[in-house]
Image (cartoon, rainbow, N blue to C red; front, side, top):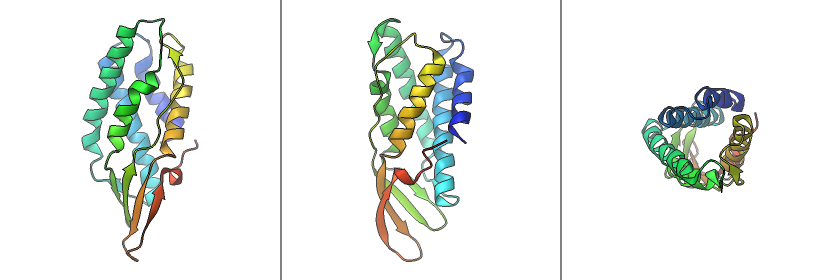
Length: 166
């Protein structure tokens, strides 16, 4: 899955802007999970997260809380939605373990998830471009360790090894 496919998946639920927030939370959460799983699989030669599917309900619940907080803030207030999303995304990455055919990656640092203040009524296209930029930046800040099954060698691992470009 590329970032363009991630954007397309999200845009389906984000138009119209004031549609069902629960559906939006589900769609964004699943699209993010699919994006990450695709990158991990490519990077690890077929590796899978041990707890991948268990993280989606956490993402959905967290995104629902973010949308509710955004709604309560009002439509013209400047809020930093990325500051609200950050704990949800970081919770997704806490203790993630990816097992591949050559080794295991254990995430120990959930990275930096930061973005600019944007108004709630900003265009959806503009929001998605900013959101994808924040995700790209975040993925390369994640770190942990990689243990090779064949050599037994453990080395530092960085999210920069993930495909962070389209």
